[in-house]
Image (cartoon, rainbow, N blue to C red; front, side, top):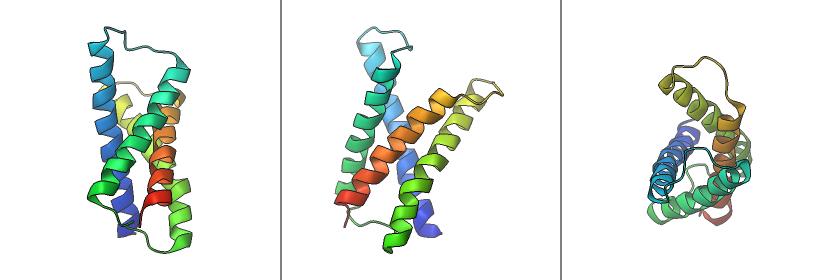
Amino acid sequence: MFEFLAELALQLGGEWIGNIFHIGWLKATGRDRKVAPAQEAAWSIVTGIATAGITLLIFPQLALRAPGLQLLNLLLAPVAAGVLVERWRAWRESRRTFDWAVFGYAALFGVAFALTRFLFGG
């Protein structure tokens, strides 16, 4: 369980760092916070891969050693990260409704992150 939480913590940390870069990029380019869904999806994938690459430089070994648990992590961690990020943003925005778009982008980031660590981690 600790190993799964360690991988999830890396993923959530990466998600928030990616979000900071995203906001910075939008402000630097003078764009409104709203961008096209395809751009949001591409941003989620690119930052997920980049952040996973950075974490692999710092933590090259996967926390999960068993192949079955690694595959389970590929399924559960993106969903858990998506729900946590969506609920965090809902709390920050003082809304009660579930935003499927926010969940989807966060989960897409999570898939890119987890898959990159799975493929290139030791």
